[in-house]
Image: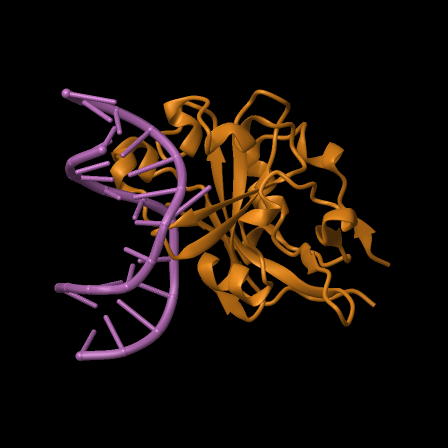
Length: 180
DNA sequence: TACTCGATCGGA
DNA sequence: CCGATCGAGTAA
C-alpha cells in the first residue's frame, strides 16, 4: 500500500543519493476527479552554493530563497520564460539543495512534466504533502542499482566543466518490476 | 533602469 | 537551427 513520503525523509540524506532514491517513487497530483499518480523516471541533483549549476550558487536571492528552506517543499521556477520547472527541496534548513523532476512515466522533459500535471509557480514554497495538492508516494516499486543510469546534467554547460560533468542526472533504463 | 541569458520545447 | 517569452541577476 502507498506510503506518503514525508519531509523528514528528505532532510537527512545527500541530495545526490536522494535524486537516485526518488526514481520509482510516484509523483501524485490532486485533480477534480481525484489523485493522478505518475512514477518518477528521471531526476537531477542540485547541491549547495558550491554547485555552479545550482540557483543558490549566487547566494540567497529572491528566487533561490526557496532552496534554503528545510527539505520537503517544492521549488518551482520559470525557465526560458516558457516552462515551469519542478524541484523538490532537500537537506536541512539553510542548506540549499533540490532535485529536479525531469521526467515521469510517459512524460519526458521537465517542462512537459509540469504541463501534464498542471504545476506552476503557485506551488513554489508549498509543502510536498497532500495538503498542497502535490506530493510523493512510495508505492513499493523496487529499483535495482543496474536499472539506473547516471550521467551529466542537461543544459548546465554555463556552470563550467567541473560542475557540468558531475554525474548527477539519474534515469531509469527500463521499467522496474511492480510489486503485488 | 538597461541590459543579458537561461536546469526547454516545438517547429522550420 | 532558431524563435518564443519573461523574470532573475548584474551592472550602473
